[in-house]
Every structure is written in structure tokens, then in C-alpha cells.
Length: 306
Image (cartoon, rainbow, N blue to C red; front, side):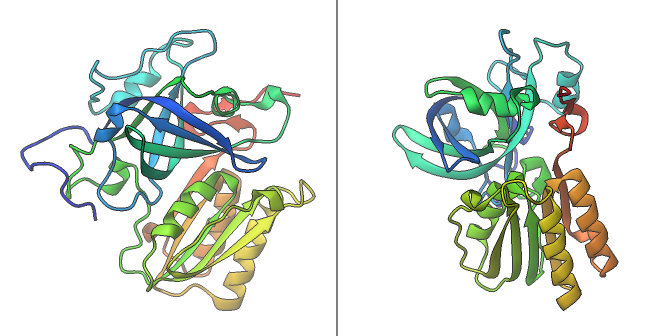
């Protein structure tokens, strides 16, 4: 649970808008780009304890159009801000894309936030706003994002409202599964897990060059699955690995599952695990993207046809 980060008398929305500057852009091989954000406002960002799968929402301008971030001039937000943002007209509204905070660390001048973005394969016509921003961003650019307000997050704040969905409760065995879009979240989770947890983590990436260094103190085994540069369809190896694990070992009553991938793959894995006895109400299944769309949910945009 989150510990108290502010006086109980403070009642503020748990997230706010932060203005940052891009401090560094670094490629982690051909499939991931690490974008580091910095700036004085980040001193007010974060949650107590490990970030786990903490997500932030980057606010991206439509190309060639100015952006007015949501909320008050000081960055504070009110309940219902996202629905109000959706009602705005394009192109002034811009785009929102969710990304995992891979790390928060102290750098020159204050906190630095690392965000790892997948550089998707495919023609430029299929590049969504997030991919286009990641490919073109350079140090010195301004970036706005919505994230947890450290002065507002308290022990009573529901974890998802702060941006964290990982919540294994008293489970001692975990199963993590994700494609490349979930690698940053799974990496952050694994590095924060305590020693007593056992289980398995399956990470599917385009090819062997997508394997990144991830360590864990826990007894969770890490298995990388590569698609051989397109020789295997997306999601296939992930579904096979989880299916094989379930066939061998079943799903114990104390197992907690965290799954993040393309929505169709997530649905297949959910059916597999629930069919083996997993209670879906106490696990986490997240569609990180949808085939044929840039983004997901109400903010998804159909990709241009080839």
C-alpha cells in the first residue's frame, strides 16, 4: 500500500500536469529508445516506495499546432479532466499516450525520469503520435505529462488512481507476461520484487536484439521470447510459453498474474489462465495496444492503410 505522502487534511486530485524538458535521448538497441525527462517541477512527482508499473500520460501536440495542456496554470487537475480533454476539438487537443516510468533517479539539478518507448517496425504511414514523437524528439524540447502528485497521494489513494496496477496482495507466486510494449513495466516490477516471491516472467520481443538487462532479487525466472525478426506472428510465442507453463504446472490458488500486450493476445492469455483456474478479479490484464490502431481505448486512432 502507498504510505502517507501528505497531511491528511490535504485533499487534492492524485495526479497533475508536469512540465519537463527532455534531458537525454538514448537508444537501447534497435527496438527501444530511452527518453529522460528533467526539470524543477519533477520534485513534486512520484509515489512513496517503488514505482512498479507506474504509468504517466504524455501530452503530445498535433504536428504544426500549439498545445495547451489540460488543467489549471499551476498544473492541478480536477476529477473528470480526461473526459473534458476528450471533448476538445483537434488539432488543438493533441494526443495522450500512456508510458511506464522505467526509473526515477537523481541527476544534475534534481530528479530525472526515464521512459522507455518501443520503436515500432513498419512504414512511416503506420507511425502513431507516440512513435512519431519518440523518433523525432531531441534534448531541450519541452514535454508535458500527467502523473502522480506526491503531495496528494496518501495511504487512502487507490493504487490505480496513482497510476499503479501491480497489486499481488498476499500472493507468493506470480506470473508476468508481456510483449515489447510491456517490457518497461515488467522490468520495473521485477527489479522491485521481494526475495520471497516465486514465479515466472515471459517477455516477447521482435528479435534477440530486444533483450535488455533486467535483474531481480526474487525467485522469479525471466524468459525472453523472440519472434525471429518477423518469422513468428506477434503474440504467438507468448501464448505458447504461457500455455505450456499452465499445462505443466497448472495455476495455483495463490497465483497472481500480470499481463500486458496487444489486446487480442491479452484476451487469449486471459482465457488460458482463467480456464486453468485463475481468478481474474485478483489479477491484472492490460491491453497496451490494439492491432490496426495507434493508441487504445477512446484515444485509439485507426492506422493509415498501406
